[in-house]
Image (tube, rainbow, N blue to C red; front, side, top):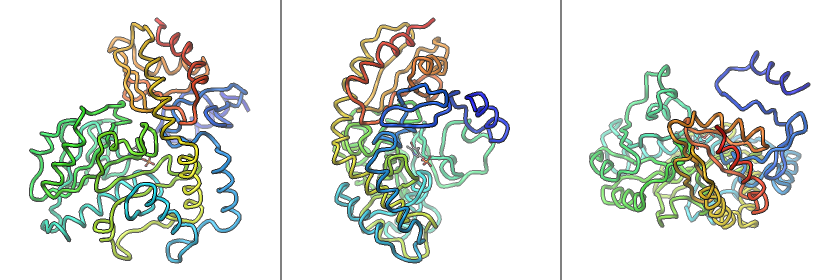
Length: 400
Ligand SMILES: *Cc1c(COP(=O)(O)O)cnc(C)c1O
């Protein structure tokens, strides 16, 4: 079967909830992927930062295969011998006392919202079912009914109401707006330290510090969604660390399992996460031994291969080089670590056509929000590979 045959099947039998580039990938290796016609591409999306460790990392693969041959799913009705070790290793790596494992990122966000509400009722003594959670315009926290309830993107919401109540939305990057929105019923502020899907939006310097102070002063939880920005993507383990901020709750996913498996987690301390009691929350697959073994290996790769430092160094180089490309179409190049956005001018004709041009040249990148091309290769990328890509990027950014 050829590329067009796979595409035809997909179009006929699959729901059309994505508009993928017409490349049919059959194999991946490190920063590279290969299509069914044998063409090789540099992956500059990393599955939205889920494959920070590179495709089919041999150490994670070995952990997956080994655990798959032992036991894969026990449910949390019984204990298994991998999850406790994942808990311990997560705590040692992140400094949070506890964690709660889920599968997708959206589920972990939902979990964080639930624990924030419980904390509001049990600890802050907000009247039951009156808790408010402050969120930011331009956010992306997943696709569940509750997470789209506070989305400001019409495409994500328009036909999907009625929505979950209890959320307030303020502009992103504006700490004063959060201060004004806080009421005695506010349980939490939920935000991304850098908005990834929103177009690689980096808030003004000092914003996260101010939000953390506001939360502390008003007895409000600070929840950081680091599903995309966490685990090294921005050149720190967590993006909030660029401002020396330690949120009360951090949500992770994506790279937590290096692209092998859906694993997410809510990280926090005992006084918050310890409020859950048996039966209040759960997941059949959350914390299963296969997921835990894979996540343990994926975390170990991040540490052993110094991927956080590498992201900082390679990201700085990549941004510097991209910034030097003369182009009539580019409005701004911005990024932290290897989370990089190239914003195009309004008259550039949209980012999609540039992504298609890059695809022709063997580079896979994806537009986010029409006008931004995101460059977020696996963190294992080296300088030679960046240098290989630059002439093609330069040519694409200069097409008419
Ligand atoms: C990807 C993402 C999510 C949702 O994760 P899923 O695994 O797709 O449910 C939530 N928040 C942020 C910031 C993300 O980038």
